[in-house]
Image 1: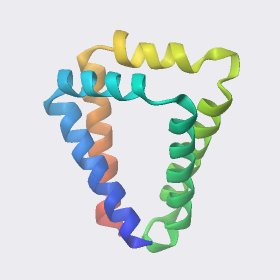
Image 2 (image 1 turned 90 degrees about the vertical axis):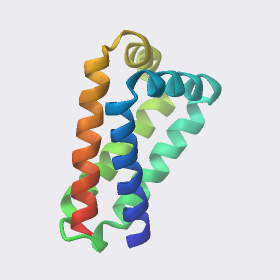
Image 3 (image 1 turned 180 degrees about the horizontal axis):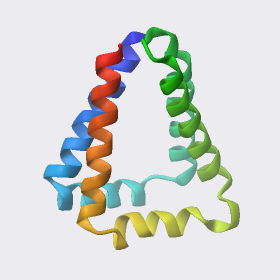
Length: 122
């Protein structure tokens, strides 16, 4: 399952660089993507990614961290799927409409750090 960790870390680094360098473009792209996609599909994709991260954790030098990321992704999928008290929509609106460019760049830096760490731990 090393291939999944390589692909995942590549997309984390690429997405983080995009968030840092092309903040407005990434915001527009994210808005269009999330508006066109059903919430249930996003939830299932997050859960699948979480399960794949947990399954591929043994291919890494730091499996605990990868299991942690997998559990977070699984919980995100469950949260979006069941949407307790309708919290998903306000959180999505905050992220896409209210959050500042500095917030997007902060998320990009975090993605870059996690992606680079994952890549070096495979």
